[in-house]
Amino acid sequence: MGGKSGWGSKSSWGSQNKGCGPRNNNEPSIPSEAKLVGTVTDGKGLVINVYATQVGNDVVFNIKVMSGKADLRGFFLDTDNNQANDSVVRVGGNDNTMSGTGQKFDKGFEIGTAGRSKDDISHTQITLKNVSLDSLDGLDFGIRATSVGNNRCDSVKLLGEFDLPDAPPPPPPPVLGNFPDFKALCGDVQQITLYFSGGPRDANGDGLFTVNLYNLDPGMDDDLDGPLASLLSTLRLADPGIPADSALLGVAIRGAVCHNYYAMDGDPDVDAVPGGVLVQGAAVDVAYDYLNLFAG
Image (tube, rainbow, N blue to C red; front, top):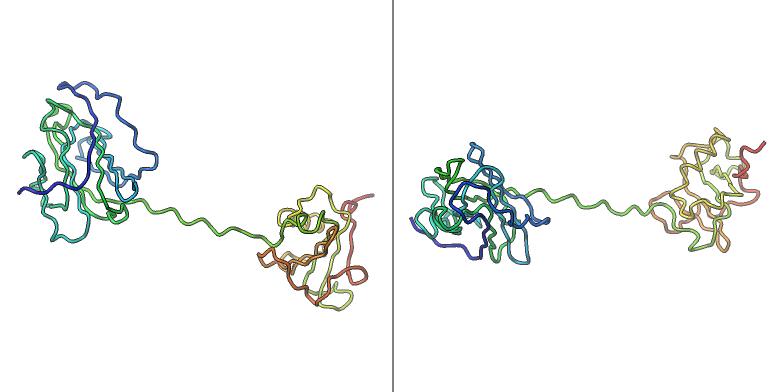
């Protein structure tokens, strides 16, 4: 019923006394980047967590008693789904065994020494070489612990399954918006012309209802994606007949050195103008002095 030890290294921490006093407080903390990949319990208050971190080509496990009392003695695990490779049930001393659980493993590690005369280990760190953490998801592991319980007279062989947390969803693609930072291209925004699809207020019959706004707030954001909704809401207070946002095809923006049209297409690049001509002057259906909409 013997077996082979796993490839890797281990470090352990715990108190060095035989009594039932508290363990020392010099144990290292679990690394912030470690993932909780497994938990086992004896149903009587003992809870042991397994944390794992991918470090280069290796996986570093932190196995820690979270509640209850126990001396960690062995850690066993599968590294693939091929049960024909599972032959490990004991590593090191005769007491470090998973015999009787019905489970065999690919690899095993001995933790500390038998009994509590030399060590009483509540936290151990084991490095498994040349393995991907993702490849362990869903595979079995086992923990052997002795000196369990308040009287420290019990022992356990606990079985678990690695359960890696789901990866966070990828971030949404950046929202480019419909407009660039216009000032960087053409200087301060001087006027804007709103292009709505034609309707009863299309005065010149070109299939467009165009609204020119001049005398704009000099403090307005030069990227129109931010202030456009507020600008339209304010405009509708003065002119309730302004069409719905869904009818807005695009906006022409006039700056100090250029005059560009941008469609409402989620792309801040310059677009072709409906009808082929930038609306200005006599072709505008309605024009407003924006800062003086409510003057008088």
